[in-house]
Amino acid sequence: MKRLCIFFGLMSLSWVVLAQQSPNPGLLYRYISITQGGSNPDANRVELRSDIDTSWARWKERGYSFGFNPSLTPMYTTVNGILSTPYMIQVRGNAEERNKKRWGYHVFEGYAKDDKSRITMLVNKHIEEERPVAELYYYGTAYNHSEQAYNWFKIGSDVRQHSFLFGRDKAIFYGSLRLTNAFTLGNIGKEDILTEKPQGDDENVYQADAKYVNFKELKGSGDGTMFYDKDNKIVVIKIDGKWMQLKVEPLPSGVEYKF
Picture 1 (cartoon, rainbow, N blue to C red):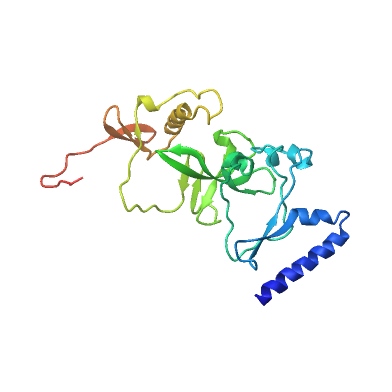
Picture 2 (picture 1 turned 180 degrees about the vertical axis):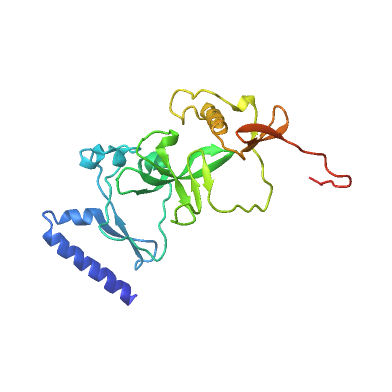
């Protein structure tokens, strides 16, 4: 308790000094406040806040304003130093979530040295396979949803041609892959193929665009590519540039599975 009193005493003294240097001392207490945490009068919490100002110069930059409404969203609060905590950093939902996270989805953004391309993490923008999705990607500078707009997201190490690369529609594994369960080939038939790219933003025509991606990747695939042709009920593999049927046989006598 004594240390806590000393800490808040020093903080208060610092604010007094800053307030004396400020052209308007009352402003300091408007944006930095200590409030009581609960019923304990000696337990307090610190809050920082910024104003809403549509004339802020940064709002003119897409990287700042994109996904926000400047008439509802406070200006960015900047910490000119390394932000460190022995606990954690947390982003939570709220009643005005769409004005406090980009579209209410983005929980993290880390910009590259070009100040445009970025690593992004977002939650619950989409529902896929009947479940909400958390998404992580490296977005480029195109500012659209095309395949070229997304850079590689690498997991494992920073050694070139090692580890695992993930893009919008493709993953490249430089390392080995071990599965502890079944491996399923793509089940592709005529209804899953579209030979022409659909018009419009890929996010808006995602179902049709996914079919075009199937066509493009299979047409441009190399030797060793495999998929299950569900129309003809055969497994095919590309060898020497040609699609060929992979021969299969019934299970040997006495071999059966309970699934």
